[in-house]
Length: 403
Image (cartoon, helix red, strand yellow):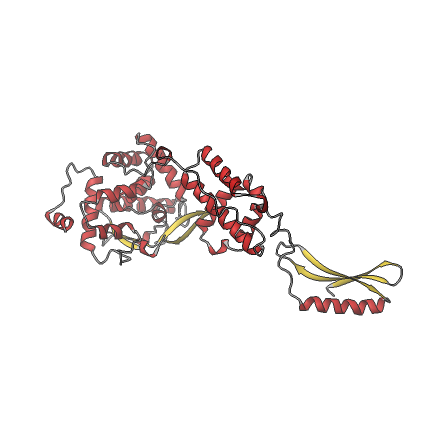
């Protein structure tokens, strides 16, 4: 029987206990009652108590203080994590968790929501600014706090305030704002490629591919061998690799518009083919067989695990430092290089399609609608990266750009 009975005092006073299950925090819950009478009568009363408990739903949470005066910011974020984070992407929840751990948990997170004022929060935001955090980081922290407090207000039946709602962020002067991402020069990109081949051929092919196609680092990490069409000199981009707690996750691309087929130049394709031969030999040496769905830039044979995006960024940073290129150039800067280099070569619509931008003007998911124009773009990028002294566009290219 999911209950118990015990004599508490005298000979006719009994404590009855019925099992209710576990609450939302995993704690075992019971219902208690005191009965006066004989043991036989107490046992019958316990049966009725258990039957009544079975008819009532198990309470989801017994923590009545969670949504009251003692509720802290950390409590609100914990509630949001339980009831809401599952609707978000893995990348978003990781970013929110990092924000909470690094900037909220051990400071403002310990404060109770009921005692916080907009003045307190604005002082907190200015302290974050004084510590060196950029405007974008402070804005994201405020967004997390606002969402958590808004949910706590809702879950408390509007008894709790949302002190974040009326706050303002500190003003950042022009010189305090981060510098816009700079596109690397052609000479910087060529130097990066030359040094990368000397240091790590896998990283060299990765950097070359990103520079030649403008794909995002997560998209490059997710490429499999069957995404590369050597006959038609194209790659198919449909997936992306993101960082999650404990490893990586392969998911669909950033948006539907990011799914595309991109033409690549012959020299980039030859480098990829060399990498495939090397990876195949390494897999055979380890007693494995590399399949067509193996990841192109996997660190270990037989290529079943994609590379971590951060590891490729670290490899790029090492090459950048050895090449003497400015530290303001990042792996993502190569997308800016692609966009800048193609300004006078192809139309804006095709550039948006090639780079996988999501805009209201773009109506295609893939580049198949204008393959000739995309092929000219690939050839132009290939000539630039291979050191052509003056890669003039052909008359056909000039016609396209003038239109």
